Image 1 (tube, one colour):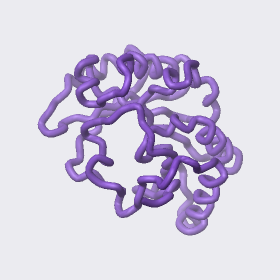
Image 2 (image 1 turned 45 degrees about the horizontal axis):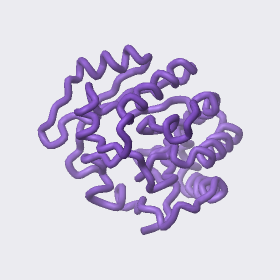
Image 3 (image 1 turned 120 degrees about the horizontal axis):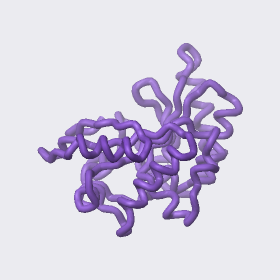
Length: 211
């Protein structure tokens, strides 16, 4: 294991805050490997602070982003980034203050409002430019099979989170993983669900070996 909190992938900066997640998706990359393109993402512990993240961020920028400035930072790692909401908010504010032209995206399962027992979306307005939320199913039983959530209300909570983002005027994309071991979703129905919730729709083709 390592303490890789910030990493590069396809020319973009990613932030890896935690190993914890409220889902245990059957197609999750971390079930088969501990790295993304050789970058170890399983964290040694859950004690990292915003200061730790910012230090790694600045070190990576200095090493890799001087010739070609970065334009986007994505909160996405081996766990659910919103599980460390306060750290995420502090780091996002730092980025927005120092690098105001940078787009910030959060890849999430949409369970944060359930976890914190409040609507956290307004707290992220002005800090997060876009949420990408894992829809992963046209109905609850399909979602439960693929996402293996740790609480029963997960599918409805995810959809309510998407709607909350839309209501707050934050760009939100509902995504699905298509083609996992020959399984196919009703993409038209998934797209309609996304549209009804005020979200854009994205299909992510399953990559057999991950990155």
